[in-house]
Length: 257
Image (cartoon, rainbow, N blue to C red):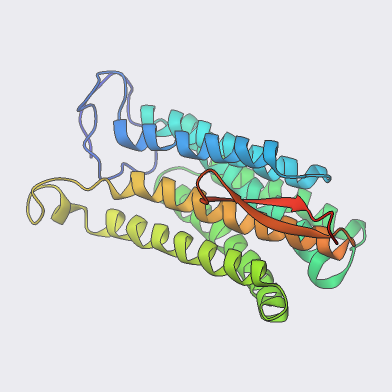
């Protein structure tokens, strides 16, 4: 919520967290700190999974880039840093459509790559050029449509393989569940902010910060799902192994098979 500090607020949205409470130089402290989760998960995903395709390395790295952009955006609430947060989110969704299309319908021709590039250019221009409410609408419309398309394609994989591949069933259900929880707290933070800053709750639960953690965790599960299926369709025998206390799913080659 608006309060004067070091950076002039020029972003199209100011989230529910009170600004400049913990530092004169950081607008939204908890929203900034929670963005580090995305940087870590993206880096972990790129390093410990067998990403034998550039697309998956790029997808995981883009999650880290989104985290870095989110840290800068929430730390400053400037329109320039907002673009560094939102544009990589769109690019991540566009990147994941390529392997999803390949898994569901076989390898596509050059038309798909051309369409991806055009989509990335149009969305980037729409998000960076528009201002105010129009910018907010352009971003959420473009990113939302890409999210829905990806979820439908992942759902198609889930329906087809949930009985024969327990890993697919678990990754999809857990990923969607965690991501949906993130969307729920994002919506509450966006639309019921007045109730969380003293009028109903005695403290702000920092739901937008929680969205960062839940969304990045859910996305990690879903990217791992796509990677596992891509290897399977390529004929590589893989399994899912849970590391770091059984919390982090990792694709590993199944040498026994």
